[in-house]
Image (cartoon, rainbow, N blue to C red; front, side):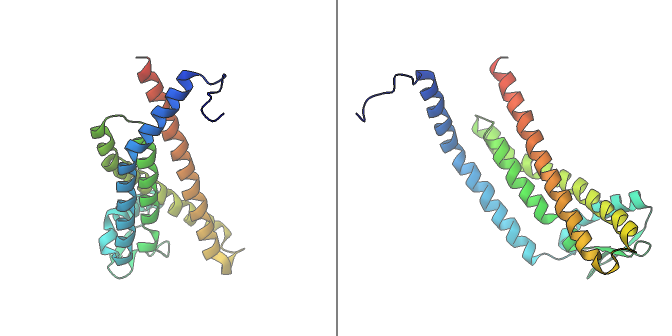
Length: 198
């Protein structure tokens, strides 16, 4: 019969499932806020130019300059031009899409690990800040790796440098995104587990 409970079902299992469902329902407003912010930021990117993205481009350019020993010149319409390397770091190299994707991922991961409303609210700006720092690091790594690989393969893949550039970008971004997900999930799960027994 439908009303009959399973003899093997443990009360604590049912209670845990109910708590998880209630917790997920409480998180929905925070998830929706993060998604709305993501959409607004994504739309903002379509309107942005190099000048609007200097908060990403300038620190990336400085780090690339330190790693390569190259000096750049900022051209408003073009971006940061490195004459020595013959590259331009512009809007397409800003890592903006990686930034907002990281923000969404970090917001999702962190919100579900906190119980108090204030903690959940604070996860959004914290996620954005952590995503920003990671974006600068990943973006610099991606550009530097691209410079090194392209200089080594220039003679072999002379007409296919753009493919190598894109492949390095996809590989770097995806690798760091997966690593960040795994590390943050493990860190927060470990912290929550320890808090239960503290």
